Amino acid sequence: MQPAPHPDPAEIWHWLSQVPDPEIPVISLTDLGIIRGVEWQGDTLVVTVTPTYSGCPATTVINLDIETALRARGIDKLRLQRRLSPPWTTDWLTAEGREKLRQYGIAPPIDGTAADGRIAGRIARLAGSSNLVVACPRCGSTATERISQFGSTPCKASWRCTACLEPFDYFKCI
Image (cartoon, rainbow, N blue to C red):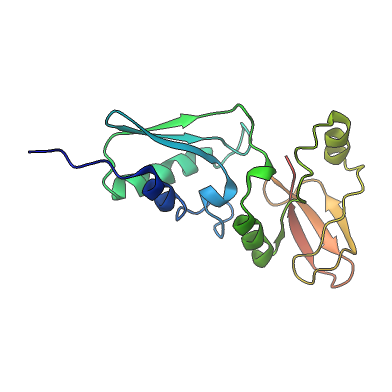
């Protein structure tokens, strides 16, 4: 009797695109860009995951959700590989993920601001001294102001729109 063929990695990527991020359930782990690889090594499926940052409190839940989703699809031999280099960046968010964040009420990171390569620019953003213009995800106005560098989760900052007066989270550039 011939063993059943392994599911194609493209199909596995599709399955993983249905696993929501535990902190922001409107986006999937693939939208977030933390799934970095899916490959068969013999009879073992290896899924490479790069957390948004090394101390992310959701990492354990994310790994459990990946394992649960794949085992439900019949994957028996599975290894999750954590990769910290290169570090995750908000540039890895998909366009669909950015739009899902906006529709959910979270301002997505500004395109290209995460990987500018200039240490001074990154330090200025982290210290809050940059001239970042963030559009309100509710009304679209750019008349916004940062309330706090720290938001509801470590990867978000608290902002407020001075046009519609609504507070919102901004997904920080990393």
